[in-house]
Amino acid sequence: MRDQLSRLCLNGSDKIPKFILGSLRDKLAQGESITYLSFAIALWLRYLNGTDDQGQPLPIDDPMSPLLTEKALIGKDDPTLLLNIEKIFGNLSEPSAFVATVTHHLQQLYALGTWETVSRLLSN
Image (cartoon, rainbow, N blue to C red; front, side, top):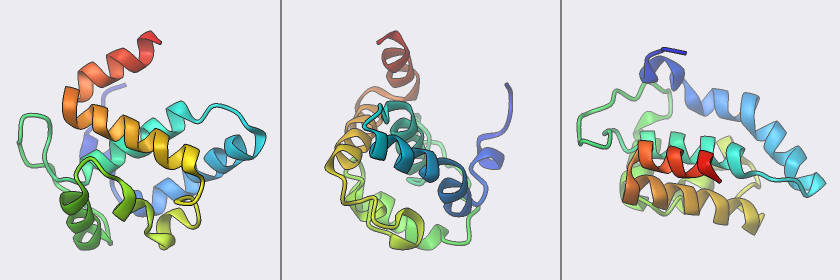
């Protein structure tokens, strides 16, 4: 599927709760794997930094973009500041498995880059 990253991430602060977090909560409640859903969250958090892996600017089109980009830039590979935004994540910053998984993925995205992180995730 080819699409523009900026269109896919458009209004992410509205889309993430509607399309990902419900499934994530279900998986946590059922004790199932949250690897891929947490990876989707980590990808979005990395995007909120406002630059790609080569340092080129990425447009952030979101009603919450000033707050999101500020917290992304301060936190870098630590998602805590972003995961504590209750309007988006509610109480999901409490399950340590979720925070740990998102942190792992986000650190990999910063350390290895997107393509290498995706490649490693899919090869497991």
